[in-house]
Image 1 (cartoon, one colour):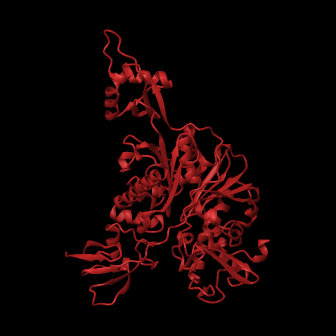
Image 2 (cartoon, rainbow, N blue to C red):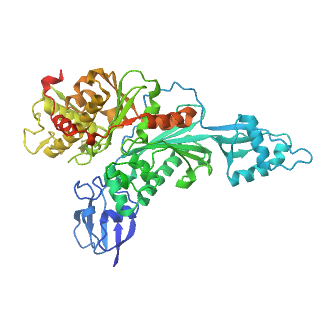
Image 3 (cartoon, one colour):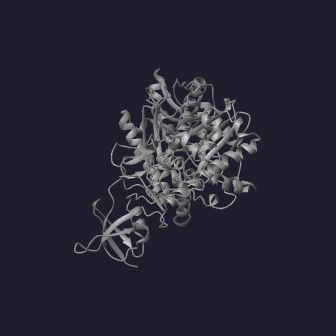
Length: 576
């Protein structure tokens, strides 16, 4: 099999590619992180490239995933996307006092008495027991060697300072150490990261970025399929690299050294969780969709090629079920769910909608296959929330008005704008109750190239019906009517930017709940922070994962009927 040279003009990079390999795979192998929402199936049309064999030829526009390599090529990729809006803020507040997982404790090591021969580490453990009241300490060989090297300082009356996490000694020094920690919410579309100190709930730096795994598909099923065919290594490696890069940026923002980070935590949905760990999520692609591992994990950050203190710990929160992940557990931690008395509905709408209903006495969770429509994939002019995206639409005096991120000419529409647009068109009769566009195959926003197609409307109907059916079936399982739900909390970026009234107007959320909806921001990220800043939050996370009952919607005999009923848009007169 022949190899060919593929020259990427814009990136000034040459990659070697085997014959018959797709240009999409060549980009991935070259580390270019292409945008491929459909995972290379050829259905989204968003991996467009221009290619030519020589400078004498005209540029030819092709889809990267559908174009195989059969010669040397020059490739012109699209201009890089503008930076997306990544939500890092949360509206959740803590009622707990700070009690960080990592501490720096002062230790006075006793000397051997005459005639005794006690190992340095045993003496150090005795001192730790005196300082903390706890026993059973674990230590690595490098730290044990440090203890021995510092014995003269200790014997001359100086205290040693031990950095500890749970039952592990992470470092020993002659002076107190600066301690930082980092928390990450790895979403399907984006990653939010926080750099923390042990003396404050507020991060000293926060950043967001798009999840580079999007090059393997916009949704988790596409990524799982890729892992089944090619293994999980590439998916794991690219997210490890992204986290490591964010760590460097966060530390630069705060003016601290990466080696001062002694603990990290991560939340994400079950598929993201497995891929981060390098696990091929085959069990999530077939019934009964069970996770490979669900328990909370306390690991070494160094095993994931993260540039932090070499002994730093990594906490990965537990998952509830195959498609209700550690991000949902993080939300429960952030909301102090063990204290919630009112019947509460919590919804995190993304490519996979995760829903929890109940209170401290009982909670039931489910997942709904909302699909990536609200993230911009499968929508003709869909895009993420970045410069050029229409993010707000309103009907004013019979005319549509819209807002564009960046106050520039619109180039597409993001999820919040899509809901607003469909709600407005339904209100003025351009879309009927069954989702049919009155104008035919597409509706064009006047004076722009942005269109809403009939297929786009159908994609939104499928997504919103899945969410609405899930809410209704959870309420039935709990034995309550929708009117008995006392509060609705929307978690995540989409819930933060979405207009609740328009979400109800299209039937994404039942109209009965319209006045009870509040956004709680990035609650999953807040939960990731809490497990580092509050010792009992780690235990609470495990408790929530065990306590939550999982409802498999597809197993219910009435799921299909509820789903079909929810496909229709509520009549405007019913929205009052």
